[in-house]
Amino acid sequence: MHAITIPQPGGPEALVWDEVPDPVAGEGEVLVEVVASAVNRADILQRQGFYDPPPGASRHPGLECSGRVAALGPGVSGWAVGDEVCALLAGGGYAEKVAIPAGQLLPVPKGLDLRQAAALPEVVCTVWSNVFMIAHLRPGETLLVHGGSSGIGTMAIQLAKAVGAKVAVTAGTKEKLQQCAELGADILINYREQDFVAEVKKATDGAGADVILDNMGAKYLDRNVQTLAVNGRLAIIGMQGGIKGELNIAALLSKRAAISATSLRARPLPEKAAIVAAVREHVWPLLDAGHVRPVVDRELPMDDAAAAHRVVEESGHVGKVLLVVP
Image (cartoon, rainbow, N blue to C red; front, side):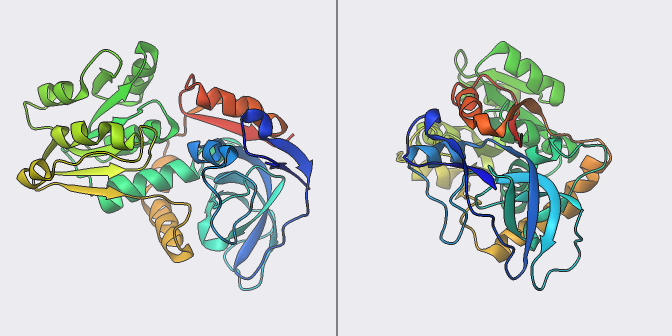
């Protein structure tokens, strides 16, 4: 088969579409013929040499995919050859085939084509596990999403609105904020021109945000704590703003607030399977009914993954950038 390889870490040109050995479905795994994958920030870090796959995972980038079941490994039930699926991966999505633990597969939601489904697994599992399973966002609460126009952000807006929460977002342009508003965002903050602490406080009569979904890390740590409401929860899922920050523990204590930090890729298989099962139970009905949808910025050929990485690195997109197998 063909897959994207990274012979040497570097810029987008380090991604090479090359012939590699076919994967084989092992115990409890399903072999999927890939139709599409999607670009995540983790893929860029891997390409640059900063984020190796966990032990035993495919060396090819790609943390999600959609496609058709080609073969079942020993011990797999509930799936059949030919089923159209999408899946959460630890790696290997940028390829024509990938072997996937059966617990990480999901059916394609009603009303979506197979390519669109590739935009779902990583963002839905990230948002549901952090915002709902860990931070327990409730109806009537306020969620602040940093990077509201990203794949994660566009899904977080929709899921929070679906459960009856109020949503604040940050983004860097008027156009991106408008697209967030069209998805349901209530409070629109241009982080280049406005102070999100002040804007959230003003919009909530001084209360602050009950839950914050943060992709920036160190750069926003202090201001995120300032923005939290009493009993607020800060969920950190990224480090785009650095890895080391100063935490005002007194402020955290005074608000009886909590901070969590998670990633999906290296979690044990049972944890991933539990998240996928929760997503299938709670989010898939919303997708089937058309209340929530993936936001796809563009589709590009997988053998030109370099172009897709450039788009994501330049942050000119809204939602997901898909890679389609040629």
